[in-house]
Amino acid sequence: MTTHDTRTATGAAAPEPQQPGPAGAASYDAHAITVLDGPDAVRKRPGMYIASTGERGLHHLVQELVDNSVDEALAGVADRIDVTVLADGGVRVVDNGRGIPVGVHPVEKRPAVEVVLTVLHAGGKFGGGGYTFSGGLHGVGLSVVNALSTRLSAEIWTDGHRWTQEYRHGAPTAPLARHEAASRTGTSLTFWADGDIFETTTYSFETLSRRFQEMAFLNRGLTLTLTDERSSARATAAADTTDPDPAAKTVSYRYDGGIAEFVAHLNARKGEPVHPSKVVAAARTRVTARQHQDAQRRRKALASSSLPAKLADCRSDDVDRNELFIVEGDSALGTAKLARNSEFQALLPIRGKILNVQKSSVTDMLKNAECTALLQVVGAGSGRTFDLDAARYGKIIMMTDADVDGSHIRILLLTLFHRYLRPVVEAGRVFAAVPPLHRIELVRPERGQDKYVYTYADHELRDTLREFRSKGIRYKDSVQRYKGLGEMDADQLAETTMDPRHRTLRRINLTDLEAAQAVFDLLMGHDVAPRKEFLARSAATLDRSRIDV
Image (cartoon, rainbow, N blue to C red):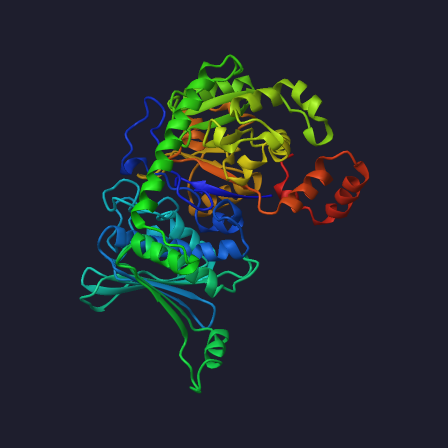
């Protein structure tokens, strides 16, 4: 079982839609943008920002750059994207859009392109009017790609000139440079994924080409090309030609017919004619039926007396939008009620550590008040009878304290989900909130600088304080350590943990059922001897800095 995060727009990788903030929150404009951790934090915790550090995460880096170029096409200012896998293992993505802005950012006081490539949650798609439609992580994505690369080269054509800047491990090596005059516009980003972070840095031509073809179908009139300059690709090409120096392997996709050409493509593959109008009509019918079914199901569930009294439910009938927070303790519940948006965020408190269902029978599980309350609130049954379509919430979020006890409770909850609610985990609808562990209060922060800085682990606190001292940033000696979520003010809890515009969510991703089952059996099952042996064998490799003691 692996995890990854969604930040402001997340998850493994589709963006999380912005939702209205808690009642009484300030208006969301440029002054509300908060600068979070930089490239070093991404490199220390890559799993919090991308789906994995395996092949899937590697290809996600390419997809993130392409998504940003596609956003230019959706804005009507680009019609071509060229992707090249270089001979040395790098990847270059070039579009003919407007070019990333190079002007000086009014708050950061440095070129906007540098802000986009180094600052998380910085981009032109958070409501500033630069885009009407968008599909990537936008700013978060570019900065994460940069942070997880040994090197990144940016070449931009905008404002009448060509501009360049080089980066190493997410940090610029020199100021943005202006070159000769240019009439064209566009952006070229070339990056080399860090082999010390990723399990592999070898890209699959088939995986990339299949994805780009799908994107070309979905974006009528957009030309997407993929070129592979690696020696392995040239060797494949040489087998099909007598040319002693064969060209690199290249595919190009462009579909002016959009969905009509996609239907023709399906017909050619299956040999069974499908009419475009039928595809669209059927899709609309399914969406309408699903919406009606969701509304009816929720109204019935709300009218049911089986829901536990301690549930603080939300008002919305939109299942996909609604979120269920599983809260640790009544004290955290009180603060969460003030911090939540009651329109779409529901709260279910649990008391202490729930039953370890891996060591208990179904009968014992159903006798446990906390387990049965959770099953009733989710509203989709359990085990083999679990019906994902009947689930009452689009997201289920475990919000526990940022300490050892909180981690233990999350493990017990995950054990329950794995054994009795597995489809909701497989669908990517279970998340862990990431609350801070410490709060640092700065003394006389500069303009544009937050008064409070949050850290999420002891080693991160030490690194942050060391960085502040080296830069001469003054802070109060009494650093606050949160013993529980109940110690936070409602505003702090909303800003750091609950508000979709600022929070971090860690998606629980069940990629290998057999491996996950083996882990749960080992760590949570009846047999003590294998667990004892595992702990003794692993003690020598334990990173003590990650233990909260």
